[in-house]
Image 1 (tube, helix red, strand yellow):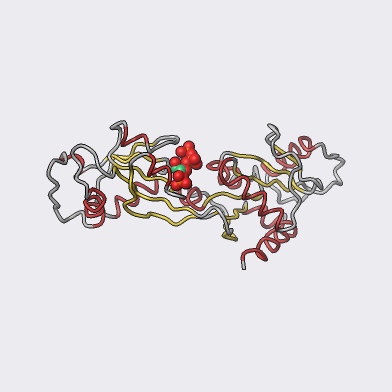
Image 2 (image 1 turned 60 degrees about the horizontal axis):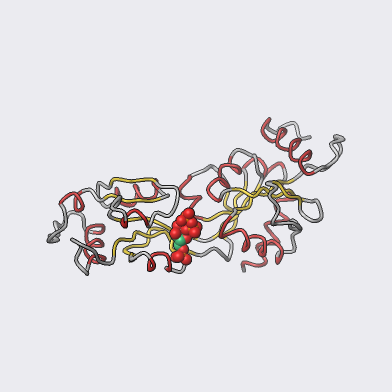
Length: 262
Ligand code: PRP
């Protein structure tokens, strides 16, 4: 074992080897632990790994949270997408895949060696297409508010609070706060854990900031996109220490993936 390895890495290696059923005779190879996002990026991530010629778990439907690759070379942690950067930053996983939106929101100290060719979506501001008190041109009005906050646009029927301090429901409080603050808008951020489209419907929020992929969820809930905050796609993330300590294994993975991205 490398003497510069951190306690977190040592603990991780031992526990992962136990979980994967590896022999811990002190001579065995260190297991590389790969964090994959559950949910909408999961299948694309596994397909991409397979196309890159990397061994993936055989039983991806299993409820086990750490799955060995078919050839035993790597362990896969199936994590909540938002937790992938956290596992990787702390060295609980060496490498991972998640959305760029999550990486920018969580601001973890991790390497991002490669953007991956799937998971394309955008983080957008959206608001009601029309409803009581909001004129049909609502999207343009809101865009006005967002991009030219110093211009005192007059929107008849719109409560003053809406103009001066819009309430924004989101799972991305940091990026949302930054977007509005940069435009001089004193937004009230309401952090939710999902289904933020409910915010305007239930009167909890005036606007939302959320991920838009096909646009179906917005349409189905009477919302329209107003502004794009961030273009996102899947990204490979790597723990800083692992990048040094397990350079050969990690570079092998990166190079195989890179062949599919060029
Ligand atoms: C995401 C996002 C939107 C939806 C957008 O939700 O929050 O609700 O996908 O996708 P669309 O533009 O293709 O309709 P997700 O299903 O990941 O769950 P969540 O609402 O719990 O975040």
